[in-house]
Length: 150
Image (cartoon, rainbow, N blue to C red; front, side):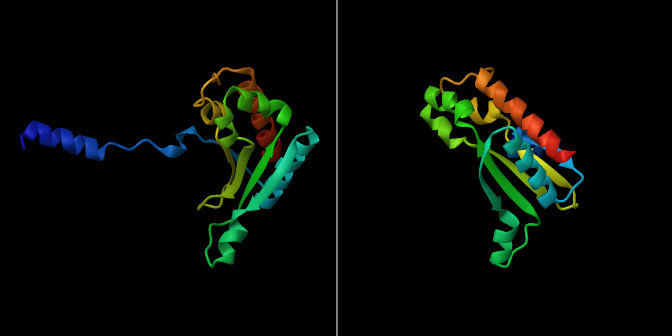
């Protein structure tokens, strides 16, 4: 193998791979996971949005003898807001309802994390990343996560 090809191969092997988490928005919180998730649920419900589920990943892991730390997933949404996306492309139902993960990282910091709607829905046909439904969802996520983090 010529030196030039070897150097190129080495450079490619050392180049960082794109992170799957690069499209994840994160907001730090100064409360516990439970208190932050409670505050998030309260903000969502106060806005008249439905909380469909609250999944305790931490408890699930403990039930099988593992520890992933405190971690809760909140699944929520509004048919009034989400239905236009599903009308545009039925596959958008894979990304809806919206989800926010409230978790404690390995350093003990608490975060609210979510996939921005433009990333989650913008990949489907007929849904422009600048569509009003995307803007409405993004604004709601920002408002709810900010309220929960305070």
